[in-house]
Length: 188
Image (cartoon, rainbow, N blue to C red; front, side, top):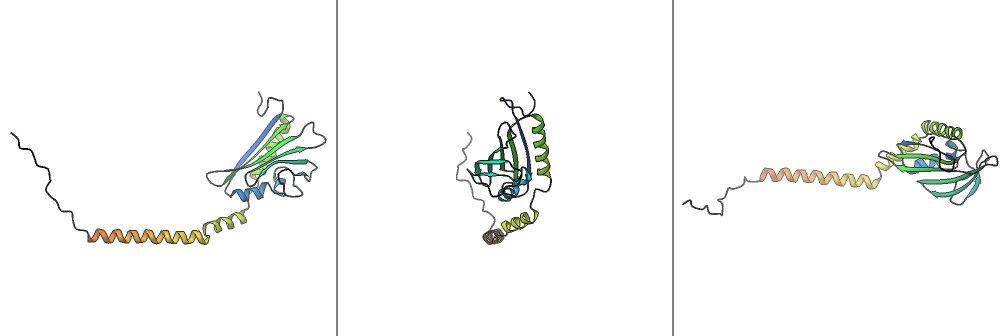
């Protein structure tokens, strides 16, 4: 069976890449009105569950599921297509950042599948990050007042413990060896 071929005779395509950014940043980069242009075509407005809209390229869109910042599932349709297609964006947690996964179902043939994979792979590898926002938010995340205060408190506690331990070890007396309470049995 050829790669991507489903039991109903249609094809599926997918591409994914991991980015060093938050799920919210990935959602802005890929799922908001302009972000859709990275992998489909820009939308006129933000997509919410149940919305019906048209992308800038004329594709009609029905939003099946929208769960920001992790899932966007949409049904795409054009007059020249024999059947609608389903596309999905998922933002998954990764060891470092998030993985953006794009998937399409009900593609008519292997050529269309290859086109989607090529376009999405290019989109995922060509400047999909938001460096200025990423650096700012990462810096803000690491230096929030609450975290700074917690870190100072933790550091102070650690220093106090070390000082106390050092003080105790210098004032401790060596252990006194006491005779055992057990009586040794006499050998007969």
